[in-house]
Amino acid sequence: MQAVQPHVDPQADIELIYIGDPMCSWCWAFDPVLEKLDERYTFPMRTIVGGLRPGPSAEALDDRMRGFLLHHWEEIAERTGQPFDHRQLDREGWVYDTEMGARAVVTMRDMAPDLTRRFFSRLQRAFYAEVIDITDPAAYPALLSDFDVDVDVFMTRLADESSKQAAWADFSEARRYSASGFPTLLVRTGEEHAIVSRGYAPYEGLEPALTAWLDEREDITARGLVCEIGEDC
Image (tube, rainbow, N blue to C red):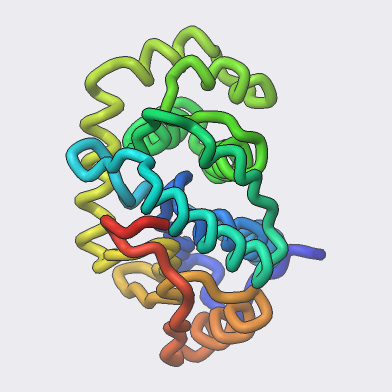
């Protein structure tokens, strides 16, 4: 698919703003849509981690949560075709804490901004399709193998308190954009923002509406399927 630019001022400051969480199942479903949007448009996409269930909001994987997630993942897989390995739910004594994944994303964004979205996608695939525990810092050296960053520097920064502060700053920024659930996709032109999608929505519905908004500033918000903050997702 050839990348093209809609009929907007070529000097305009334009970006897509993606707000999600690497451990958000609807964000994983949304990943192929983001990839197509990346191919469709030439302007950048900025990634903000929203904080689905970080730190104090984390929850132990008990039987109730395990059953809910299994049903939820099966539904998403059926609707979108994204792969889920249910063995991730076989862990005992595991805590569903999304903070470490968020810290990893902001660390990559600090070191190699152009790799951020691809790394976000890599973490999602690791968690949902490869049974890799991205809440464990020990998983990250292997996950960095395809990324041109210094692994030792990355791991040092990931462990530093500053990565936690940066992640929580992202969570606050997401709230300022009124993103209480994920995925949320916005488009910004100069000082003007519009919500492209609240929740998962297919590319075929988003692309025409987004292009129309860029051309004519029409209302474009799509209502999608979403992981709300604090929900099992």
